[in-house]
Image 1 (cartoon, one colour):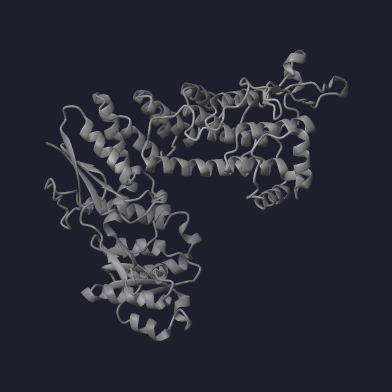
Image 2 (image 1 turned 30 degrees about the vertical axis):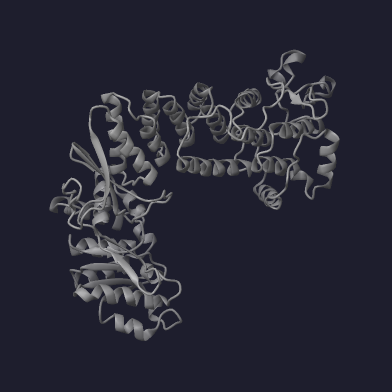
Length: 586
């Protein structure tokens, strides 16, 4: 495909793709020929590829346009996110919206070929065309040579000039540089914070393609937002808004840039825009608001940051330790407010040992519980997807079984518990759990599968028979999913009933029709779900009882209590943290 369409060119000068190349021999600007796909009588072999810089900047291990210093944890998190993003782009997961896709079979074989060469070492210095030709000819799969080589340059952070010499070779030999190769070159430019190169590549790509795909825009915005040209990132974001909904990465890159430059009003404006588009912010960007707001006066800013804390509460999000410290330091930096934070563990009763305040109760009121039970049974259990996971006849039989044996104290997801320790038989894991929970004369219901009744290496008949003397068992079909069974039995048993599973129950929360009911569901789950894990030596199962107090961010006005986790967790977990930050106004 031609780099520019013929109709967009005006005269010979307009055909020049201006990208300046550092000569591997003389160090002087080198021009290379590009032959575009236009009628043969109009082809020229004298086009040049020049960018605005006479030579690429050397690779600076500290980076150019360095941003304010950060905590190691923040840098590690950002580098991890960047590595993932760059890897996806380098592996060809992104494509041009203006390109024709290759057949799926060919794309798969192409991807498999590239994966064979993940450890290819790129040259240490720029090569001339003859040298690139020799390398390509000796390469096992020449059809993916350029992609593999650029991927390696990204991996080993090669100097920009090495990548440019490869693009020179590609343009000379084929008369065009494919979109995917430009994107890979862009990854390298962003990785090394080569701001002028990023701007030039953006201009080149915009000249060739009317619309770029989201991944390329993300790279450009990210690259510019980490530079002294960060306001250009906002311009590109506006450009994106005209053609698509910007991605979370695009918004967050701009939010971080605005925050670093103390433009907090702008940062929060972008944050609210993001939420309005149903984009979920990362904990990383929420931490940035606190990091760059320290010591800044203003009631409006304080209100916005309290709003971020409310967002954590409403979505049952728990900051990791470094985020928690950012919150603590921000509170303590508020001029003339005299906030002081302390790390603590809340008593079993729900009382904070630092300020002596009682945390919110985890149980629902009778009215809340009845409303929640009614809506879960209507929207989730009798909703549209329940009978894709079980049959109406089976669920009706289960309802009769439950109604004849109510109430239960604890409902156990038997299959879930049976997998807690891979070194033991599944029936042994379940037996240990039932044995422990039955000690307090509790009425137990275990939800199992019919295959558990067949004597096998994992399910011993004598152990199963012994368990059935200590708990009620309902055995569903092997293909059935028991979440609906677990919810129904627990809710029909009353407010006191707890349940045991490691399932997050997120799908069922999503089936609920309104945000208030989803909030009540999360609160009910926090107060009724018993967490469990294998003991350190693997001999026992450790059960963590459901808490009497609610484990969410909460405030009384002159105090804040914020639960936190020691480490960042990408995935949602049903397990609530046991560590707290208590902040009180003296």
